[in-house]
Length: 183
Image 1 (cartoon, rainbow, N blue to C red):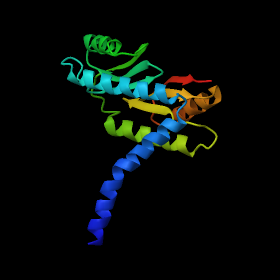
Image 2: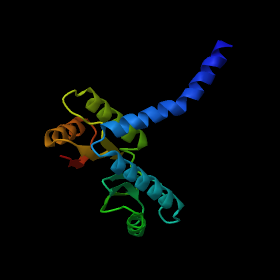
Image 3: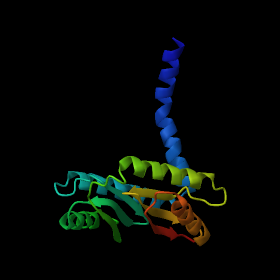
């Protein structure tokens, strides 16, 4: 009986805990709450449109927005697929610049999904352990063992330290720094 009550309590608390995580994330973000909400709307609208598109289908592409600027990072099978994704992004209200970080779609036995996930976890852990930098608003994308760093930080020192952490991980092929400094 206790187990059932505990399970019921956890299930009832989950929506509130998720809400707390969202509130925390918004409170530590470098953007004001309105911009944070706008960027979230841009991301979700664009993801839905890319998923519905017969050419793009949002297979191996991640979508991030910061201050109305969109970043599409991932594997593209063809140039028309990439161009279509950009066109769809520009059709979403509030989108400014669209930056694409494309990787050609390929099967790479030397770096697969498990390698990408492992690198992501190692870099994220390294950033969390570094008490001298504020990296909560940095998104890490790993595609074919290539790291793309996105987000907003308060200082060039933080950005440089984040890039150094990514470069220090064994197995990382390249690091692209798309972090923006917000003052």
